[in-house]
Image (cartoon, rainbow, N blue to C red; front, top):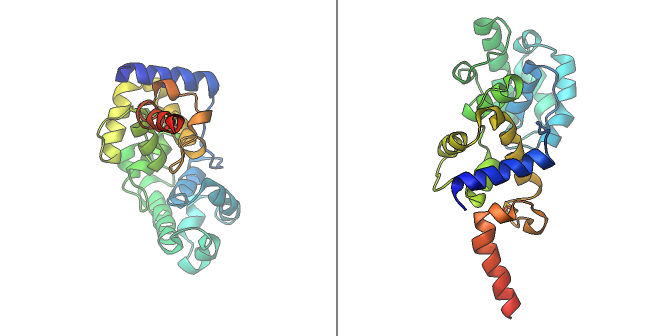
Length: 222
Ligand code: SF4
């Protein structure tokens, strides 16, 4: 199978089985999504979703959050990974939104990346989820799944993965493909023991058709 065919197989599969693919973070507007995505670094979406309702109630917009002190905000975040940094980032982010962006979340990757706590991955998530821009956020799941299937080849960094993926996926599907790969990595193609038996991508998967099939053949011989 060529790489183009692999992509086409995966796109067809996901389109058929997961026509709707969305973030599992709960949010009602771009500000809330930005807060949730900053909090989600090295933390599960479930844990973030337990934490954000109280934050959004106390700080309903960037204005209120920009006026929060570290001591006020920290207790809301302390159950999440890296609470010190995330508390500082959230306050700094809100202050920059107020001072530089009229209190609104900007919608370009370049502008977003100026905000404290916002790297390329977060900026790609915000612009693709809110504005359906053809930006591919590469997290650990996307990186692993794309490499296993063979959608990427020798991609050593998230940026290399991002570039290879967007070169093959039709523009209008990129915002969805990000969620397809994340959710597939979270629930099926998990890091330690991928659930290949349950996976509909087997015919197109390089890892399955080389490593896993070989293992199965060796076991059968025994
Ligand atoms: S066949 Fe296995 S390795 Fe390949 S994508 Fe599916 S779960 Fe992952």
